[in-house]
Image 1 (tube, one colour):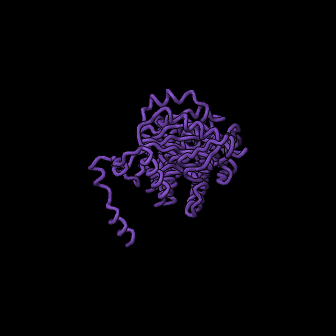
Image 2 (cartoon, helix red, strand yellow):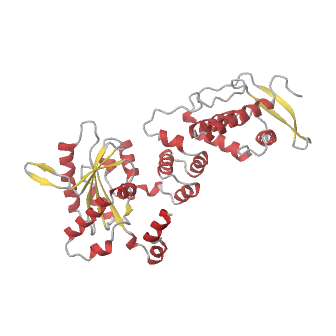
Length: 398
């Protein structure tokens, strides 16, 4: 028996209209709108399938009908529809009406369906709810949560396929935030994202030995700081072999500093995002005693000064005491009232992680220890695979 009040065609039309509108917006580069479309469709499907409003096989029927009405247009497979449902259900916190169940105007529909050859398909019992006359509001489908942790801008910039990969691989909410942020900031392709998910990059993200969680004002800032810094940096513009020929360690470190300053743009791009270079050998003075930290930055995301102390050899605990002095003076003499506590990073050639974690735990200023390497430290077969600089310049010139 067919229903006269509500037909399955209403669901098909609602989904088709929303996707067409979303693809039109996406063609204009509005990724936020496309995500809102999929979120709205996911909600629509979730409501009908999870509450047994539709019978078994409903998504297959809808998918077939959508592909029939819009031949050649991608995004209507059963898998795609299920992914939209998954997207909504995993981010239900973004639904402004998540606590409201709309079940009025529902009815049971026995619908005669046909395939592309106009052959009858087995009848299916489908319960359909009238959600705003089958209109999916793509402009109000997602509400930004009030939590400070939520990566608002990154979330809406990340393509839908990337979102699904993250949801399939990760359950922890903070881990999802991490991968969303990193994928956007590094402009990752799908394969690159899949690789870091497989490698459990989030589980190893705190490889930078630090005391951030104990010394920064709140957990949000500590998490941001841990995400901001890596445990190792490739400074391929530094020739470590030449520097190693010198006898004086101080001369070595000045040479590293000099080359970093000469290549400050490359260093910032390697070091992270939202860094502004303040200066090198920045003059600090307290009670007539002068100090000159190697590199001083300001990070907009952390809203904090970041001092980097360069060392060409192995990590030594005395480096933390030196860094502690710099941070104390910066917080007292340089830091603005609205800024967060200054952060210090020791950047050295090598470090024993366990030892660093042991000695850094009792310091009350936020500090971390990272290491650096250069192309000269790479295995010969990998180093030989790198393009010749002069040849690369010629190619770029052409």
